[in-house]
Amino acid sequence: MVKRLLIAANWKMNPPPEGSLLPASPYLEHAAVDVIVLPGHLDLERCIAARLITGGQYGHPEPKGAHTGDVSIQMLARLGCRYVLCGHSERRRDHHESSAFVMEQVVAALEANIHPILCVGETLEEREAGKEHEVVKHQLKGLPEHGEITIAYEPVWAIGTGKTATPQQAQAMHAFIRPLLPKDLHAATRILYGGSMNKDNAEALLLRPDIDGGLIGGASLKPEEFAAIVKIAEGITKK
Ligand code: PEP
Image 1 (spheres, helix red, strand yellow):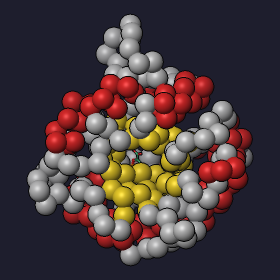
Image 2: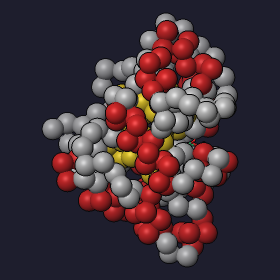
Image 3: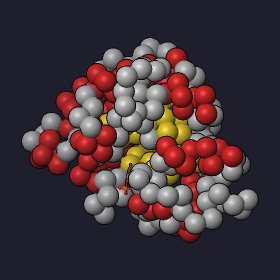
């Protein structure tokens, strides 16, 4: 089986980059690689209208209710979102999302028929204490046995810092994660790397056997740089 790489643009709390909604957008789906955008909630609708494959950066697991300011995963699905990020480290940090709550999001996404991208990763302190495996294993606890998901390994110390995990460090963690996934899903699940990926380091990372794509923040806001990363991914075939 040939696995398509997945390149996801996490625009965080930024407007869609210039030209991203135009007919020649570099953020559109590509023939040989899956490209998706994760805009802020207020921009979801126009990204969908521009035919981008779109996901939410967060969704509440409950379908509706008394959660002022929140948007539910079911609402994202109704709007036409195909993906949702679950447990990005900035959400875990800023909104104190626990791993159990994040897993509720994963389950809710599968129930709503949208594809969850579960983010995991250790802080610098945890890595320095040699606890990175323990932390990531805990964040994967309770994964549903069935249903298509994507994992994004994002070491917190590499996000937005310009400090990337080396391809060896990333590959080692991805190889650790894969056997922890439900048996049926081992081989088919894509495990993305995220953390200061850019056009200069993307190839070395994406060539590693267990790195099936990238979750890209800063570099995804620069259309030319993002296009360069997608082009690199197009040239790589994974079995
Ligand atoms: C992210 O937001 O998921 C991310 C990886 O950001 P950056 O690429 O800026 O490190």
